[in-house]
Image (cartoon, rainbow, N blue to C red):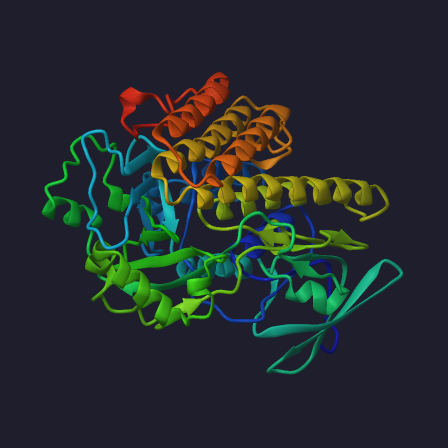
Amino acid sequence: MTNNVFECDILVAGAGFAGSLTALVLNNCGFKVCLVEKGKHPRFAIGESSTPIADMILRSLSSQYNLSWLYDFSRYGSWQQAHPEIACGIKRGFSYFKHYPGKSFFTDDLHSNELLVAASASDTLSDTNWFRADFDAFLVWQVKAYGIDYFDMTSIETAVRTNNKWTFNASREEGAITIRASFFIDATGSGSLQEKLFSVKSSAESFLTHSFAVFSHFNAVPEWTGILQQKNIPTGDYPYNVDHSALHHVLEEGWAWVLRFNNNRTSWGFALNGDDSSLRDKSATEIWNAMLAKYPDIHNVIGNVPLSPEPGRIIRSPRLQRKLEKCFGDGWVAMPHTIGFIDPLFSTGIAYSLAGIERVAGILSENRDFKQPLYAQLKAYEHTVFEELKLIDMLVAGCYKTMRHFQLFNAWSMLYFTFTIVYEQRRLNKLPVKYFLEANNPDVQAIASCTYNELQELTERPNISQQDIEMFTANIRKRIAPYNTAGLLKPAAKNMYHHTAANL
C-alpha cells in the first residue's frame, strides 16, 4: 500500500456470501486478494435455503481449501453446535400446498393438494434456511480474520487495463482509493457493475420464465401446522414438520415462500407471474393485500403479523429474470448469480453460487499467471453457465404453466428432483461434475425439452381432462425411471416422499 494505492492479485467485488467465500478460497490458494463492498454488514438480504447439493459443495470447499470451520454450516445440527449465535432455520425438504381463490385450504386422504419431498433423514442432518444478514456478516468477519484487505462503503468508479494489469479507482467516505490487480471477479449479484465498467448489457429477453417478487421479513408468524390442525387435516404420515422446510403455497398467480429462522423471524414472499396484467401496475402493498384477500388461509397466517425491523416494509422486485450478454473478458469473470438469475422456486441460488465458486477457484488455481490458457477455460465456463441457466429456466417456467393444475405441477416438478438425484450421485461417486444439475447430460436435455414441449401444448388447450393429466404424468414416470431411486410419482407414496436425497 502506498498513499491509498493497494496491490493485489485478484480483486473481488461484492461481499455477499458468494463474494466473501470466493475471497477466502482464493486467499487459501495463495493469491493476494482484495474484497470490495459498496454497502456495510450486517445488512438485510432475502431469506434463502440450502439443499443437499449445497451442503456437499460446502464440505468439499471446506476440505479442499483448508476452511475447516465452513464444514459446520453444511448441516443444521453442526451449525447449531458450532455457531448457535448465527441465526438459521431447519430445512427438512420442500413442501407444497395448493390454494384456490376464495376457498380455505382443503385436501384428501391421497394428499391431492399437498406435496412433501424430504431432503434429509433428521433435523440434525437437515439442510438450513440461511438468515443471510447474520451469515454474510460472519463471513466478512472471517475475511478480516484471514488478513484479506476488505473495503466496505466503497464504490468502484472506473477500471482501466494496461499491460495485463487493472487499475480500479474507487470512492469511499474516507477518500478515494486505487486498487491494482491482475484479475477481477464480479460477485455483486447484479449486472449493474458490468455495464458501468465494461458496457456489458443484461437483459431478460431470452427467458421462458417471467416472474417478479413481493416480499419482506416478519416476526412471530403462526405455524402452518397450526392451521392444518384447526381444520382437522391429518399430518401423521408427513415425513417431517412442514414448518421446518422450504414451505411453498401454490396459488393461481404464482406461489408464496415461507422460510423460518430460529430468531423468531420468517422470510415470506410471493413470486408471481409477470404476464398477469391484473398485477402489473400495482404497488407492492396493493399486491400483498390482494393476495391476502384472495386466499383466506394465506391471510390467516400472515395477515396480522408485524413486519421485522429489517427491512420494515414490503418490497417489490423488478422482473427477476436477467442474464449478462457475456460472462468474462480480458482479465475478469463474473460469478453465476451476477451472470444471471431465474426464480427462487427450487432453491437453486445457494447451491449454484457455491458451484460457481468451486469452478472459478479451480480455473484460477490452474492459471496462476492469468495468461492465455485462461481464455479457453473461461470461454468454456461461459458456455456452461448459459446452459445451466437454460435448464433452470425451463424447469421453473414449466412450474408457472402448471400453477392452476396441481397434479400437473406435481408431475412436472419431479424433473427437478430427478436431475438433482443424477447430479448428487455423480458427486458421491466422485465422477466429474462440470454442469450444475447435469445440464449437459443428453438424457437430461432430452427429457426436459421433450416434456416441456408436451406441457406447453397441454396447457394451451381450453380444457385439460383428467385423462390428459394422467397421460402426462405417466410419460414423466417412464422417462425418469432409469434415475428414479426415490420412488417419485409412485402412486402408493401419495405425494409424500420420505427421503429423496443421496445419503450424505
